[in-house]
Image (tube, rainbow, N blue to C red; front, side, top):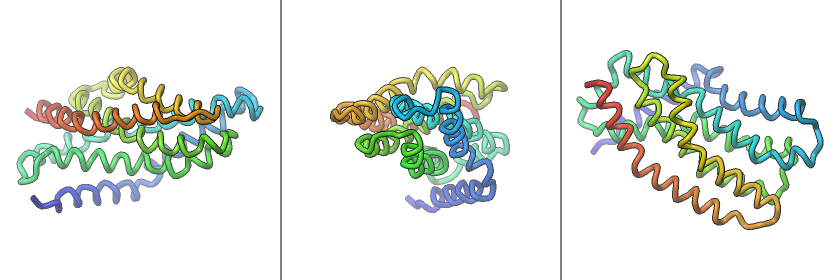
Length: 223
């Protein structure tokens, strides 16, 4: 099986992300906007900011990942190229995985790279920085996968953005709870192994099942 179509799709997605630099930087800008504005509202006290830092960073990462979800499959659906995914010799499942990987590279990886800066700005203890990075490495792909499923299910609806939020939030609550829990317990000097292990299990389950569900949902939309 040739991987060329998947590589071509990823190159196209990344090229478009670079070309529309302002839109691509929105998740990162949103993250830092939250981190800059919230301390102005709750006060600049290091103890308070350190206590709420795990939740702030993760909620910002979650909301940032929502920004580009509505356009995850819609341009391909509107210009008819989505139907071509089922006419080519490559399984649509591979193209779905490629598109989800592109979304994570564009929205998730920048947040992970700049997480140490955000942690420093919020006085997060050094002991919690490693678990924060690990939780983002495990959790942000789940956000892309769950978001992709919601985007596929709402592809043919007119109010997709509203339905996206309604569908996504109940599904990602466990991710938010375990991720912030891992960072919080690490900041208090405890081992975050349990929370990170649960996140890893959720990621494996999501990678195994959700792309299949997305492929089926996209197929229903074009039939």
